[in-house]
Length: 35
Image (cartoon, rainbow, N blue to C red):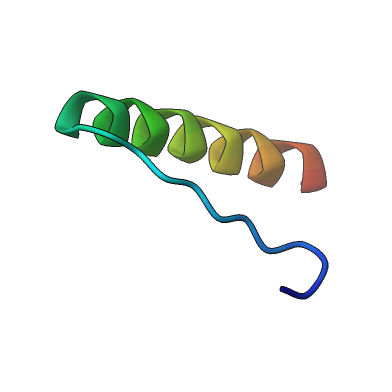
């Protein structure tokens, strides 16, 4: 895969929801830092 891609295997719904939450928080933080 090209540099920067991420491949993640999650085993259950709880893991998926936790990962989505963390990614959303990080994306919001990135937006704040670039302002």
